[in-house]
Length: 329
Ligand SMILES: [Zn+2]
Image (cartoon, rainbow, N blue to C red):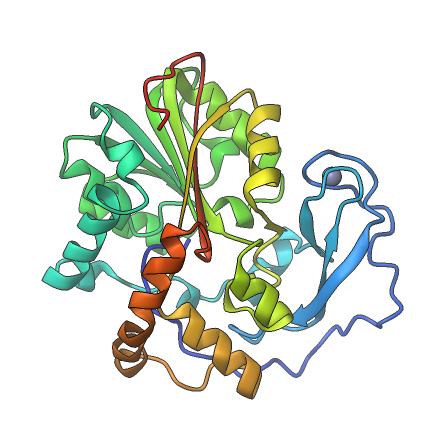
C-alpha cells in the first residue's frame, strides 16, 4: 500500500463510465459492520467519490450504531479493484529509497517518530502487512530486524523482494507462515484497505509470538482535518479505504482480536493538508510534485505541535499479545 511515501500519484480525470449510486439507494441493505458484525443501518456521515484516481461511482461513509466504526458503502468487490488500484496508485519509490533524503525521512520515522515504540524493542522477526515496495521493512532491517512482507500488488512485492524483504505476493489469507512466527507485525496504512479488519487482526495475533507487538498506522478519522474538510479530506480516499478508524474503534478491534493496546501517538502526513485544501478549492488535486512537497514544509511547524497534542491526521497504535507490559509508556 502507498504509505510512508509522500509521493502523490498522477491525478486521473474522473471516469465517465460511471455506476452512479442514486442518493436514495439503500446503502446499508443486507450489509453488516466490519467491526462488530451487527447489521449496519447507522447514519450516513458523508458522501464522496474517488477524487484521487478518478474511479467510477459514488460512495458513503456510515457509522455503526452498535460499535461506532465508520465504514464505506458500497464496498469494493475484488473484481472492481483494477478500476480503483491502477499501477500509479503504487509509487515506484525504489529509486528514491536509495536517496539520502528519503532514507533519512524513513530513519526519522522509525527511530524518532511514530515507530519509535517498536524500534526500541530488541530486534527480532518482523512482518509488514501491505509492505508495498518494502521501504519501511528495509529501514527496520537496517536496525537488525529480519523482515518479511505481504503485498497484493505483484509489482510492489517484486520490488520488495529485490530489496531483500522475504515478500509474499498475496494477503494474510494465503500467506505461508503458520503459528507464532513473528516478534512484530506492522500494518502501515493497510488495515483501512482490508475487507475484514477483525479477521486480519486475528490472523496477525495468531502469527505473533507471546509478547510480540502489533503496530498499526491508519488515517485518524477523529482528527481536526477530517472534521474541517469532511468529504474533501485527502486521507478519506474513498472507495479504497473500506473502514475509517479512530482510537476507540481501533482499540476495540485490538481487544476483539485478543491484543492489548499499550501505546498511541499521532503524526501528520505533511502534504496532506495542502492536498485537502485543493480538494476543497477544486474538487481534485491540481498541484503536486516537488513544489507541493517544498510548500508543505511551511505548515510543518504547526503540524508538529498538533501532532504532540494528539491531533495528527495519522493514528499510530501499538498492542501486544499476552501479558508483556514492558513497552507501555
Ligand atoms: Zn459495528
